[in-house]
Amino acid sequence: MKPTGPIPPGYDADAQGRVVIAGRNVDALIGEAGDTPLFVYDRAMIAARIARLRAAMPAGINLHYAIKANPFADVLETMAQSVDGFDVASGGELATAMGAGMAAARISFAGPGKRARELEAAIRAGATINLESEREADRALSAAEALGLTPRLAVRVNPDFDLKGSGMRMGGGAKPFGVDAARVVPLVRHLVAAGADYRGLHIFAGSQSLDAGAIIETQANTVALARLIDAESGTAAPLVNLGGGFGVPYFAGDVPLDVEAIGAALAAQVGAEASRYAIELGRWMVAEAGVYLTRIVDRKDSHGKTFLVTDGGLHHQLAASGNFGTVVRRNYPVAVATRFGAPGDEVVSVVGCLCTPLDRLADDVLLPAADVGDVIAVFLAGAYGATASPAAFLGHAPACEMAV
Image (cartoon, rainbow, N blue to C red; front, side, top):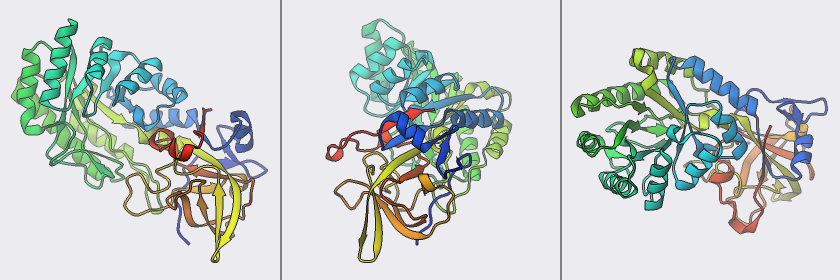
């Protein structure tokens, strides 16, 4: 038997033992959606996360949402009313962000390999482009000159440090992201001299860390680096995006991040300048508010093991299958959504409907006895789910999505 990750707080069962999300049981939600598999996102849980974050962070700091975590339209409309800016990483995300009601002036566009038409779209809209190289800076300046517009440009910095213990390290050493720290000052001077609207710095060192001490250290290093760049370039950055890195507890033994400790330390670091800093988060804001519901379509035994075969799988939930950035596969929090809270009495593996042995949603987990027609819930599905998975693989239909 293998452990599962901790089910996030806030999920309960009704009298019939069905998972309740935003006050409604899973049968009612599936009935409204019309089918499984189904992603359900709880708006109130997202709002509570943002409220907690605002209370923990220094007063006046900007909270940005990285929409790659979950760009579902109804989620974005909720986020547009709750955060101070969106961060996007493609021309498609830029259009999606503006369509959700976020003003272009509060959108920043990061990511290497921006195409000419993406740079032009951002310049026309008035979004901030986080430059990933000196060559990209020249391309953006040339595009702006041809359009007769003043571009809003920031510099993404590849710092000499990374976020210790992070799931994905985005800084330190040779990276495709950002401009090496030693080369940033000349670039800032070049942007200012060229007449660009210099918007500041984006310094993102890593993601998915549950170590508050490591995040505090990284933020302190980031603030110090930004101040050094300001001093040496002779230009104060209007905004310093500190990135994020805040992780969520996916697996057995993971402990929730102490965001209050991080906020207190950051307040001491930035002092009265909090309004010129931003925290950019995606996963931490939305992951725990999402549940993936998939129905059991077959139950089979093979060589003494029991498999629950569902109508969903890695084509919707790549991360839960263990094929999205993890080295050793571990189980996400899962439950029988139609028998929630019942004691476990059999060890089973939950697998998807794809013709590949990679399609596993849970390995050798202890669950209540379940059969065809029951529903499996995969928690922590609010981030890097539907749009981070190979939805077209083997021609299966996309999952339904709803925000409630």
